[in-house]
Image (cartoon, rainbow, N blue to C red):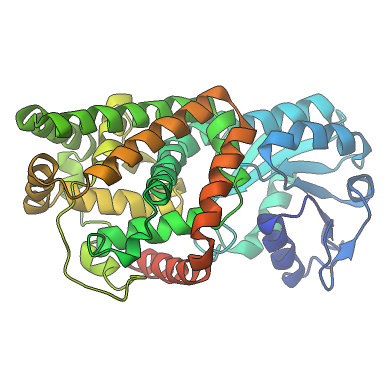
Length: 415
């Protein structure tokens, strides 16, 4: 018996990556809505659904219901169906609603972007309405990615992706908003120098170089993500007010209490995920190399947010994204370096160098939170694409540098 045929409905960057990998692995008849050599292209999703043994819906979470409603009834008898959305609640609900009862449901999610080598990266498989045989079939097909497979339920997946991605994304989105509002390209300023700053800049540009819907679906359709983004905006606002008011004792107490909750004694006994020195080499700047003190409001707020929500980020390392691992790594580095933490607190109270940046960052965090709370995909898209246009001229350099940074960090850190 030959290999099963694989159909992909919707052809974004992740769908294209899957199609290419499946074809290279010998699944010679993957059926996709795209033009690729050695891949059979069909005019519509009905034809894809009729002849494929496993159909992957690789479309935005916002439109998954309407797309499955259109093509789901044409699914081949006994086929397996799954999706690649970052939020599984609406995806699985659409499958339950629109697929025939004789179709099995095994979904998946590669926890990385299309520009990241999938080997060794987390890959979630969800056995929703399927036999073990069907799950094994999907596992065998996906094995060509050489990813690290984790089995979860849809609900577990959404909680973990909220914990590891939602706040991470909004932090970087807010940084980009703040820099654009201040008409800044941070790599051109002597204030944004050093490894932590390199991570902020490279990842922010990497996110804005992608499609807006990659982040909108996770933020808006995942109830846990909404709660976390709201708390992050609140943490940013409250910490910034303490800085503005010069309330050193209260600020320091809050920072240290949050750090003690998130970075426990167990974490202190482990090696750092990464250090500032590892990130120093990945700079877009051609100017000064001497690091200047920063209050790192974005980092302080992420730990404050985790503390307020009772999130222990280390619990989800096995299925975390590269961006989350870098964000956790630089945050951990700050909180476990006493001299650096004292410098951050002193800077927050005594140095006004970043006040205008922090003001715009606070505005941005609150605005992104409001956008997500309102559930407006149009507003999210408008905000994202306006800032995307501002940074677009530097995307090529940033993506190249970001890829090198992620590869190096993944090789030097434990997942």
